[in-house]
Every structure is written in structure tokens, then in C-alpha cells.
Length: 323
Image (cartoon, rainbow, N blue to C red; front, top):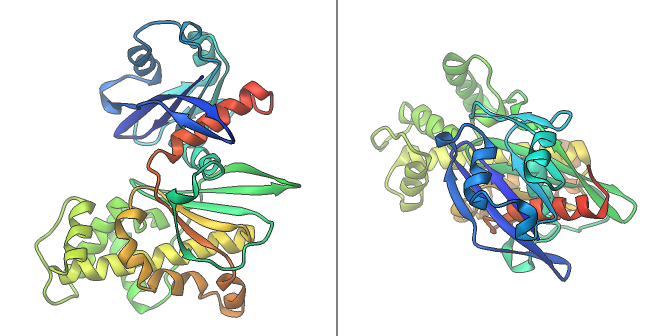
């Protein structure tokens, strides 16, 4: 039995997991409001009801958290927490692994059931590296590097690299976002807050625009319903920039094994992802168009992929392959 967590700025999901065959089975996850707690430890105390982890049959724990994990510690993004693996290990009495949230999702892609994945581009998969990119509250990226017969997940903060406009409209978008933020990363566009910013940008440019929005879900709802021209333009541009950055990542790591889109947004906008703008931008890499067309692209449909990945990381701790 493993104690696993998928920690976000809004919600922390904690569950127990057990190995079954070549995958993992999750018990019912409990969801906590992250901002109501001073750190991860009190959340775990509430989940375990103050019972020692070993009494629950727990052999190891692993948690995916937003932010870079350095020397076993992480200062979480959008939360005033510092989480230390050694302190958690002393508190729980079992080995603990801390992972960047996208690193946990990368682990999860290795144990996902086939029916929890939607393929956008079948391509021609070949042994090589795999890339994961996830738009949600932010834009996360991770890589699984091939080492012999094994794929080894590694964290990245690539979503914070500078946005590179590809046409005159995106140059105008860059200027619009520079005035708001100063530094414009891909995360400023390919994320929930990015959708809201895109809607604000297109309200000044597109006829038939609806009223301002505060929530990304409202942008996707209006776009999918075809009732707001600015929302439709925003979601189309979102998909195009998402595809361009997914292609950038695939080129940088030569992801011949495939690119996996995770996060909460992609499953909700599948109709737009299938329209072609995403894949057109993904493939539009000049002389490497043919190579990009051979790289598989998949959408992760399983919302618990981060918990499954944390379970895999915890199992590796028990096996002695990770500290």
C-alpha cells in the first residue's frame, strides 16, 4: 500500500494505492482545499486521522507538487509552502519521494490503461524519448528519457520559457501581454488564465464578442457553444499556440515515442484539438515537417494520472530505485 498525493494550488488530492498487475489501483481520493492548510503535513494528518502510516499498512509515500524539487525540497507555486521530503519521512515513518507535478504525470503515462488515452496523431512511434505537456492552471512540461529498455521521467520548467510569436497577430498578442505582465512565457497563453487573457485580446478585434469573462471554463463553454466570436478566436489561438509549443518540446527532446497532452483543459476541448489547428502548428517546423508528422500525439483522459504516477514513484522507492 502506498500513500500518494497530487497537490495543486487550489486542491490537494490524497489517496491510497496498491499495485495490481503492471499497474496500480487507487482507493477513493479525498480532496482538500490547499489554501486552508499551512502545509502538506496537516493535510496528511487529516487524511490519516492521526494514525501512523505503518499502522495503515503503508510502505512508502510519493507526492507530486507544483514547482521544482531541489535537494528533496520544494517551494510550491501559488502556495506559501515549503515541503521537505526528509521531514515528511520522519513524520510518516516511511520513505517519501517528492516529485514535480508533471514528473508525476510522466510516471502516470507509463501505467495508464489504453482506454484512458485519445490519439490525435497516430504517427509512426519508434523507441526514443517521450514528452508530456499539460495545460491547466499553468503550463507544465516533462520528459521521459529512454535508457535502454526503460523510460526515465525527468522534470522541466519549460512552460516558463519566452513565448515566440509566429505571425503578425501573435506579435500584437505579445505586445498586449507585455503591457500586462512584463515577461511573457508560453504559460501566459497556454493555461486557464491564458484563455481569459486571449478572450480579452480578441474582444478588441473580433465582431460578435461576448461580455468579459473571469473564468477559463466560461471561455471554453462559449466557444464550444458557438455563441461568442472572441471565445471562438481565443480557443482556436490557444490550440494553435499549444500545438506550436508541444512541437517545440518534441523537437528539443526528439520525442519519437510520442507527445502526451495532460492537464484539465485538453479533454474538455477535444473538438477544437481535432479541428486541425493544433496539429498544423505542431507539424509546422520547416524542413522537419515530415519528422513531426511521424511523432504520435495523445490526449490523457484520466484525471487521476498524477496519483497513478505518484504510486509508481512510491513503488520505485520500495524497490530501491529512487530516494
